[in-house]
Amino acid sequence: MKHLDIYFDQLMEKAVRLKITDLHIDPIGKTIILRKHKHKVETIKEDRVPLMYDYLKYKSNIFLESFGTLQTGSFQYNVNMLTYYLRFAVLETYARKHGVLRILNIIPINNLTACGMPLDIKDKIRTMFKESHGLIIFCGKTGAGKSTTMFAGLNELKDKEIFTLENPVEKYMPDLVQIECKDDDLNDHISQLLRHDPDILVIGEIRTSLELQQAIRASLSGHLLVTTLHAGSFQEVLLRLKELSISTFELRNVLKGIVFQKINTHDTKIEFHFEAKNEHEIKGMIDYV
Image (cartoon, rainbow, N blue to C red; front, top):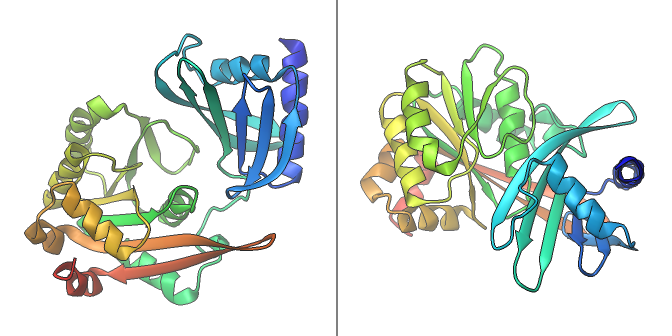
């Protein structure tokens, strides 16, 4: 195991130096692809990759015998006296094994200013967080940084009691009460947390109709709920919400804001584009989707 510790340490030092966001690991092909925001930077061919794959499953508390399942785990790792938050997702089928190690804080972002967004967008988000109840959604495609932006905004709210339900907890935020919650336990966890009278309740990501209905229930009970959703535009957010069985009436009554972001890539230069719409602006869009 010691030689794997050394090899992984060297791999992480390279990833941090190159600002790598994802490492795609193919234990059968014995390759590791280093990627930065979906763009390949380097391919490593190494006989130790199958062992590294199992090593990362062990570090992430993923069952080593995980054939036919999708699993995700997380852990922390120190490189050059800095702590990095890592998420490892695995997929195993009859013919393939595939793992993706994501470095969640490769660029340290702890507030909205560090996100690089325009002042008017920052002001809109900060105003949204002053709402006493309702639903705020941070959206974008996979890897767009929506969770990073959401937690950066929440981290500014030092006077708020904030509870999060995440699967898994990916980045430790000392001022937030973070709870790891499996999908099947979400309803019970929400019911229990509402008794603690949170100012803001956070669900890491909305994926199903049941999760959305639970989020709406919390929003209508006088709490501010913040979450993320995969979508490619404002219109797609509203379409996805309707697809997940939220009515036009509920949309009009619970949505307090939507923040959308995407990545623009020009050669090696990466830029983040942000948009935000408040409750009034969203209501003007609802009837047209």
